Image 1: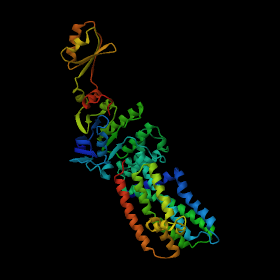
Image 2 (image 1 turned 90 degrees about the vertical axis):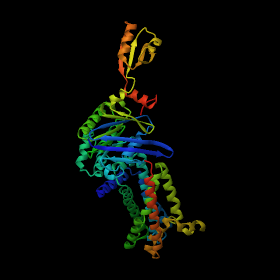
Image 3 (image 1 turned 180 degrees about the vertical axis):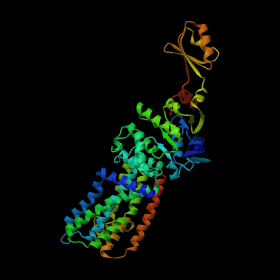
Image 4 (image 1 turned 45 degrees about the horizontal axis):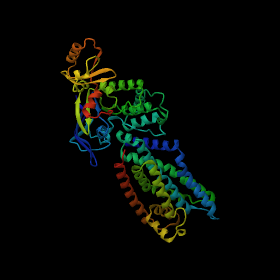
Length: 298
Length: 240
């Protein structure tokens, strides 16, 4: 596999504030990497360095085989950024056509990208009059116009409805199959986990964890048991392998490192226990634990 | 390839002006209307001829090239569209020169309107003379558009509109483009020689009345260099 993105020792400071404190990151051809972390973790700064908008200090930062600050390299990227407002005066066709021109592609490439993102028939519509979801697809159409070797997508499914999101992920999967690399940030953690080959967790400017979604899930005390039982919570807390136990809405919720053992013990203590479920920690819970924030992620 | 990108950028800029023409009211219509008003009120028998075309024409050109490129850039920045262009690999020089180039047709339209009013109020004009005046005014527009870009790269859209108008109106008055400098208090009139619009107007006026040109040319070249540096620095450090 060939690296389409390689970052080594990236440091970025805004005055006294260190936004990135020595980040390493790679994306390989045909690989989807999800970049996750709480607000202010440094994700957007990392993305902006990768697409050449800003320049930190790095031992190495190579995108599609070149320097991201060079126009030539940037033309090999497909980028979806947050909070982009299109010019009031330009139509869908003119905007994607302009993107094709800037990347040295023929006009047909624009038509194909428009069709791929489900915007066919809207070519003459002013972009500013599109719905939020359509504008998001328009930005992706601009990004896809030149068969990019690396797609950098910052919250790309923001504002998309279910159907548009499905179409979006299908498009991403096709591009991955064709060998493009994808770096994605999203607050829809489980959605990203379904597609990502690898998850990189960033917190306070550092990579704090990296692995497949399953590998990351296994880093937490792995199970949570929910049950209706007469056994007092204080007794359950004292059992082996129980990390915590509490009553929630009449049910006892137990965090455990060995769910099978705890379930056996529990049923010995209370054979009449009912409504028993065992759940794996979600990736979102893993991220909360890793980044020490109790509030919402991303 | 940069030529194709440049053409596309200019087209997009022109479409922006044509499809959202309200901003042009102040840029094009106001200078022509001003000229018509002054020519009617003060023209007398001789009318407002080529001399006035030089001074009011300078005002007309400035009202376009000092305002439009900067506002367009500030708007693109505020929308995040500039971020898209940068990430797309659009070369800095191409993007900025497209904004300047797109303002020129409107400067020409403004000058054509002023010329028409001059013809109607003052009678036949010396065509080669008029063409020289227009040529000087168009070429001399460059430094002002660069300052406009510098403002557009630094300020928010609303602030850029205010700053650019705050630059335009006083400099136009203090350079003697609306009223003869003799009508201003001496201490105000003395400021004119330090202002680039004064030198642009004097250079245009020299095409009608004759007189030294190289001092004005040197001043405008110097202003262009300063403007280019200001625009490049402001753009590179612009928050996108």
